[in-house]
Amino acid sequence: MADEERAFVDRLTATLELTTGGETFSIKAGDLKRFELDIAPWGFEGSASFALVAIAAQSEDELFAKFIEKDLVEVSLKVARAFDEVEEKATSMTVKGVVTDRSVVERAFPDVAGTPVLRRQYSIRFEDRGAALLRQHRPTALYVDKSLKELIEANKPDKVTIEHQWSAGEAKRPVLSLGLGVDGNDASFRDFLFWLLHRENAGFYYDSVGDKYRIVSRKPEGGEAKPLRRSAVASIEARFPPLRRDAASVLNASTEAATKKKDIANEKGAQGVRTDHLIRSSIASHLDDRVTLETARAKQREPEAVVSLRVFPTTPLLPSMKVTLDDGFGKNVYQHEKTYRVVSTRIRAEAERQEATEDNGEESNTYRIDHELCLELTSDPVFRFPGFQRPVWPFHVEGKILSEAGDEEHGTYQIYQEAETLLDVYKVKVPLWDDEKVIVPFEPLYQSGHFYFPAYKDERVLLELHFDRARICAFLDWRPGARLPADAQGNHILVGKGDKDQTSIRHVYADGKPQLTIARSMDKDQQVITISEGTIRFETQEKQDGG
Image 1 (cartoon, rainbow, N blue to C red):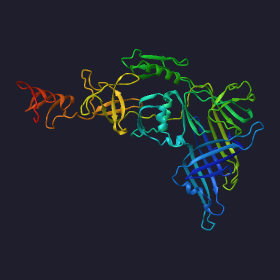
Image 2 (image 1 turned 180 degrees about the horizontal axis):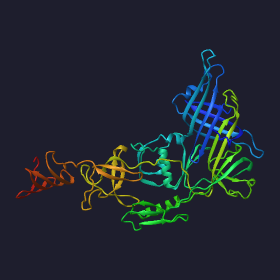
Image 3 (image 1 turned 135 degrees about the vertical axis):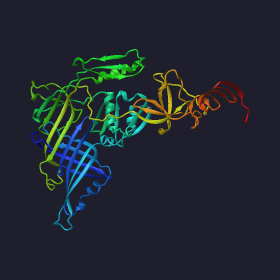
């Protein structure tokens, strides 16, 4: 509803189009009794209420049968001021999206034969296609040697276009994962997208003219600044966002790191207030990269302006457009000679005449309108985001160790090197995703460095998947031949390539007494040392075929 204290009356042309089931239905301004739009840098939300009147039979309302079906409803709302200015011709604005909620109120006429429904009041809520569909998109997926751009493109809904103009989106990443469908993770892909862009200090912008999105490293230029006429503005308010008072540091918790800490100064900071960002990496460039990122993220927001209009602009003012104040405001207002960028546009319009039969089918209508703009200085470097829920990591999947050393049946291990860092890694096949090969650190894990027992070929492991890394967190099975019989009490260490090429160290209890056996075998050649109570026995033999 329009705010009565700030509302003005203006005449608008408007067309609302609904497309569903292969048909398009057009509603003119005379039947469009109310609409609301909140347009932000990243997209928009809107609502509309319109009336359809049947004169002789309720079948004249052809929309109803399609409206109540479960098919996706696409929406387009085109709005313009009905009157031109002396120096400027009115241009329209159009937003396109999908309906998210819908309802209808019917009015039957008992005095007419058959008590037909001759009037219906429809209400819809809608938003840009990407937002509406990505809210319901919760993939669980693994990406290897893919870029952030490729990950986003792989998860776009149909008819969604995203242009990529951000440097962080191009680099290939060894591992990327999404666990949005995992129990306990309530974030959608839309949440993930804004979490990611906030993390990487990139912006997300919706272009209503082209009905597409852009991911950018720098804010849009916005073209030539349009002057705001004093006669078109009811009020203008200067707002001063809260400033960051924390200094920042990046800490490197790796014992191998030459530099453990780098500071990021804040000229407007308060003594003793800080944020410490923590990484753990032996690669020096990782610390430098994080410092560069956090320096950019620590920049301060600039003062803003909130403008209430008293007429509907002949050129609609949309996010990323640039505006200035004309000379009618005088030289003493705070905003004088400053250039602003539109951050958001808010429109509330309610028809003066609400009866369904009034202005029926008219191309234009008289509305009571509340129209507000939020502006930022063009020098403001801080990207804006909607509220989002942080996705949850890690999640867990099973994999099998890859080794290309030795024959297929050999239980070998293999050390690979990550191409960029030259660090030693395992490769693990993940059957869930067509044996996609993930690199994980080659490290002792839960064993002391005294023990060197690398994971062997095809050993089942539990992988812990984070957003951009993976590691082994558990081993899930016994090596063939390593497990002792169920009725035995003891321990067993089995190493080697396989049952014909291995060494076994077995400690068991025989008749309640400890017995240690060390056996080495290579094809037919075998050596065995057995230590039991009062006895040390040495054996060496070459097995004959058949025994």
